[in-house]
Length: 589
Ligand code: ARG
Figure 1 (cartoon, protein in one colour):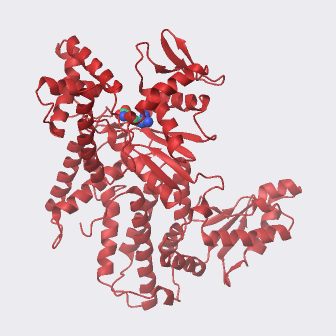
Figure 2 (cartoon, helix red, strand yellow; figure 1 turned 180 degrees about the horizontal axis):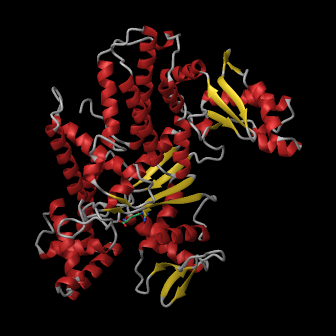
């Protein structure tokens, strides 16, 4: 909780205790009617009920005591009034608000301390499973959301003082590996291939094995069988397939690291399904031995259904009738591996919502199989689909899956064109690098500003706009502030004494002290869009302040000092928020 608010709450508590009111009800809440009040007290109704009094009588009594509350020797409220049927409306005194702002901007950490805001039983360490790239397959648009949302959550946890372990959990053990290796063999490229080759070979091999009914392409059964056999060979460690596979893995990981870095996404571990290849077999044997897994039509399964389930909850299959392992087996063994090697208190999976059932089965199976050292929470951030115009899943021009690289390049090119067309003054800066930052900010912010679980329509032209809730609009606010700073001398913030706040300044200061509430809400809801909404509103407020005030030419020094502090606090907050969202900021645009 903000230090000012917590100081007020402890004063309130004293008043409540003195009056025989229930002290657990002694707190102020943000007002839901900005124009009327900053904060309100809603507890008069509960107090009245407990003490069999009239709520309005309680509100009248409380407000007469609250109006004189002092914080650090200054009156806390400029306005404190009871109103029917039993609320109390409060407006913070500008001076007290300002002193709190001054504390915030003079602190490197903006006075954010997770320990003060998180619940007492919050996890100390969270393991995040996000990204989920597949080796030898190019990253496609579906991989954008899980990567950027996962990265933002990771940084949010760190910002709140929670340790994280991040793992990309590569798909590196499935049929795609067999397909690619057989494709490489047929093209005589086994000894000499690049990531470019792999990206061409995979879709070709996949099409060849599956066929395409729409275009009258028959499946190549012989090729498909070879791919399956090769996949099994890799899983059993047979040569030379295993060595080829290892080379593909190494090359792919190097390439993936570069691509994720371009999005400012970084993982502690590039583990994959294959990391647990030696754990899977013995784990399944053990589960069969102790009766957790049982045979069903030749396969081995674990029942995960509960009496309370409303939706279908089929058993979790962990060994196929031919002895092969499945996606669930590797996820289950991965949980075991993570339990053995890390000490996380919670697991957060940022994965496409279409995998909800699979993950729920795995989470339940892991508890049933007692793979966990202690009871802990699993949470699936069930990520919605990114759709193209018209609300249909995003496709490339020829109807295939759109590669992420194509999307990123398009955003960068459009950002560059926009800079050139608008005749921006970019003297002395690298245009391409600026366009890269703007393009990627547009892409990421367009994604992050939507609730993770909801589908959204990807519209790069809208995302690149300098107006509205977009990345470029937020960046532009910062660039504007920077250009003000460039024209000003530094001021000594601690020397500012004369406080003269008009409505918009009051509004900005008030919003500033709510930043930690916003981070907490984003944390509780696993939702970075809460942070986007906040910086968007803050940018709007700042920009209306900017239009109504002449900052650089202000003659009254005490006013000018406040204006500079406004610029300072808005700048610091938005920069902090963007570092959580992992969005880079250009100097000019
Ligand atoms: N590689 C998977 C895919 O592309 C996503 C992996 C998600 N994480 C997990 N632990 N299953 O669909």
